Length: 249
Image (cartoon, rainbow, N blue to C red; front, side):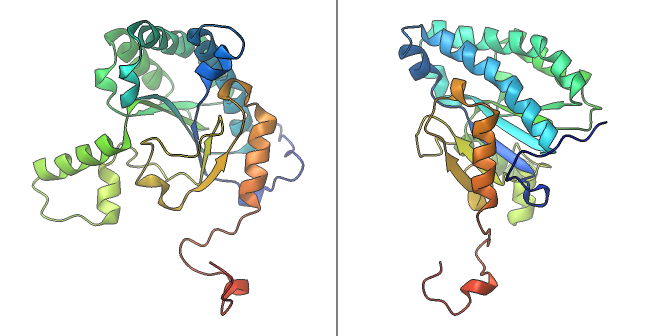
């Protein structure tokens, strides 16, 4: 495979392994254009292909997209139904993308609570591309981090586990076997986690984009990566330049 040159200012030796994105602002994007909310969700789904392609080209190993939260069920039934149908259509339409970029599909969340048609399409797509070895695209569906933690605790209780440590507990989460995200991006200017990866985000770097998700293209992704690569990740420790310096964190 021909090696793709890196965008200016991005270094291969500081690339995040796992990028997670809270895709926010579809409804506001549509409202600003006088369109129904569903049109915003469709535009947001269309945006995914470019970001998947860019992450694959950059050699990023995991991309998690917060697609549908446990709280989203409270939206109007027509909107929820449209989102579920959009998921099925998206999975069918992106098979060529998964083949071209050797993408493997995974999910986190209580996917058993999704409509049967969506569940079947998810399982079939996961199985079809399970042998792929490139980017893992993880869709957070019917996902809530507090529920994830409760489910992990209940799993430990059912197994008769008397005590867990951080490592063993992490394996009980929906993301068990996946690395924690290095970089979490949220679009639309909001600066909160919204019940997303509360445990896994302990040492993630955060980047808040001021534009809505349907406008978040690869250049916006590159800007987030440049910002990420400009930071010193200490994981609670210190870098040499900060030792004995009271001005450092």
